[in-house]
Length: 117
Image (cartoon, rainbow, N blue to C red; front, side):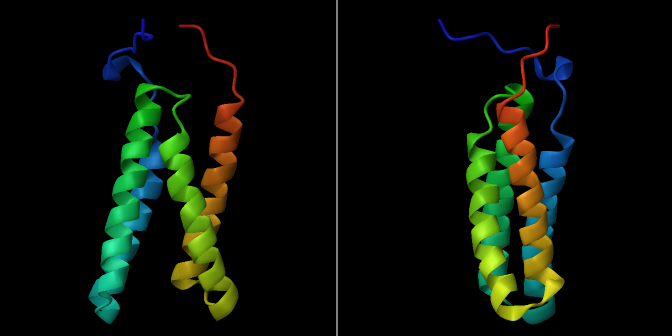
């Protein structure tokens, strides 16, 4: 049988993951407001939503990092290339840096031993 998950109220909420998702989504909104960039809006909301759902999954099951890993990995590559080509910290460098930090955090989470409760 599938492992039973604890109710949401008794789990540690992935605040860092939700914060990262908010950063990504708000960056897309800001890109649209400042520059009228529809691609920024769509990409920001799409990746922000995926990262937010990934944070929700980690909150429910700390070992379920795959969706967050995919979102932060894709953004590391995409925004890392944009930063490399433009040398502009905002927004590409900021998102690439935050995404690299998320990748490191998720990598460490994959190798954590489960805590007894």
